[in-house]
Structure formats: C-alpha cells, structure tokens
Length: 109
Length: 111
Image 1: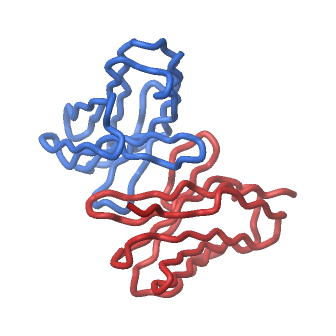
Image 2 (image 1 turned 180 degrees about the vertical axis):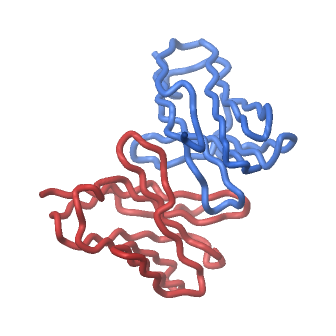
C-alpha cells in the first residue's frame, strides 16, 4: 500500500519557525497525529487534529490540514534547542496506527 | 513511576540465541503493541493485542512471537536471533488505535 511520507531532515536556527510536512494516504482518516521522539526516549503524542478541522493551534504548535491534497503540516514557532527531536506523523488505518518514517529536526543556536 | 516500562533497556546477544523482551503497563489499557524502529525506516508494527486472548500479527511478525500474560504484561520473543533483528524495540499501550503511550525502548544488538 501507499506510505505516509515525510521529509527526513530539517535544520533551523533557534528562534526561527520550523515547518514539518507530511502526506498521508487515507482520505477518510478521522484523526491525524503528530508524535515527538526525543533522543533516547520513546514516542510521545504531541498533538492531533480531527479531520473536519483545517487548523489547530496549541501554544507554539500549529497543525494545518489540507484534506484535498492529503497534506498535514506541523509548524513550531520560535523553535528552541529543546525542540530537537524526530517528529512522526501518523494516521489510523483500520485498527493500526501507521507512522511516517520521521523527520529529524536539528536546531542550532 | 513510568506508566509503560520495558526490560531490559539494552541487550547484546549472539546469533541463534533466544531472547525475551518484556513490557509492563500501569495505565489499565487493553491494547498493547510491539514496534521495531530502524534508522530511516520509522516504526514497524510487529504484533498487537487487544486483550489477553486476542493476539494479532503486524506487518513484520516473521521471526518473532509474543505472549500476553495479563492485561498489564506483553512480552516479545526472538526464538533464534539473527543480526538483522538488531534494532530499537518499543512497546506501547492505548485505549483506541490513535493515542498510544510508548515505553522507553529496548536497544537490541545481535552479533
């Protein structure tokens, strides 16, 4: 089947905005998720968006959803060194959660 | 205390050895999962369980087996480890399929 696609790397300077993009596969997905994996740790749910929404904002995080293009993005405002991590988008397919390969965000000071 | 724990955290073993990775959770969730993470490949689902009597294969179950000893415990076994099973292994739990809670991972090296 098709894969959840993400670019593998993003490098930004501290204070800049970061935008991580994802293309998902199932236009009927009800929820779409962003998970964060810090070095040496497991994944943690960062945020999610319901499919009837175009945008969700949560402090420095903004999630944008374009259902027509099956495109999901995560914007981190005022990126900090502590935001350095791997970010995974994910969608539910049947009874399973399908993850993208992850985008490694590197933040330099 | 962590909600999802995994033991061991690191393991080095030799080809052909039997290995068991254990996962325990205190979240009271029925669903439990085992994933494998390889650099650049994301997470791949090995097995999942919806309750003690319901075990399902994921996309890469060959070479692995699982046991759900109780609602809180889900173990993953490699009957005869091989070098390409060297990876980071994660256990996760959930109520539904979307919001999953992950353990800290087990780094397994097969020589």
